[in-house]
Image (cartoon, rainbow, N blue to C red; front, side, top):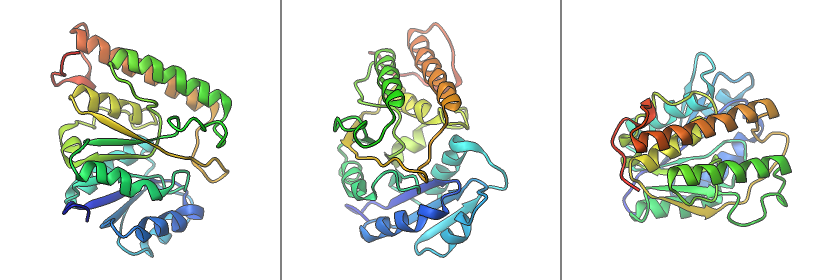
Length: 253
């Protein structure tokens, strides 16, 4: 609990057996997380079995692989069903430090912002911490394009460390979103479309073999998906095109 708000951490998991215990242990050591919900996307390792052995953890296993976006849809649905007021999405691969959860959750629990991102870019050390150069360049280009099209000023749209208020998750219609990695980008665009503000905190990140990552081909697909989302947002804002992601009236620029 934080400021009388129930804090739930959701972990979209796929083959995370090697890093799950360490990530979960640091989450629970914080002393403010009421529940961890781990959704296993039909892993081929012992992820689900390990998760079931951990305290204060609800485990849901997909009977087939639904993709990263499909996994998150289940995560947020289950979190709302559990009565979460603050939902933090954290990968169980230990790429992002759980130590930032108190800061991110506090921003939401105190009513300052309804959404918080852990940004790898704000601190200016993304490449020094191991982000591949080509990913950094792509991140900067896609972020610039998205900011122009969405009328926002975020430092990045591509972090996997996020926190949301219950109100945000109840307002968004996530079902039309992709079940693939571009879900992350689409969700942020929907948040902006619905007039919510987004805060960012500097977040260090680790890059190692067990950390989740997508290959170059999937990254290119993701990039084009981000471009498409930003263009769809702008056309919908101008009233020149319809999109199932942006059905509700957005606020004017």
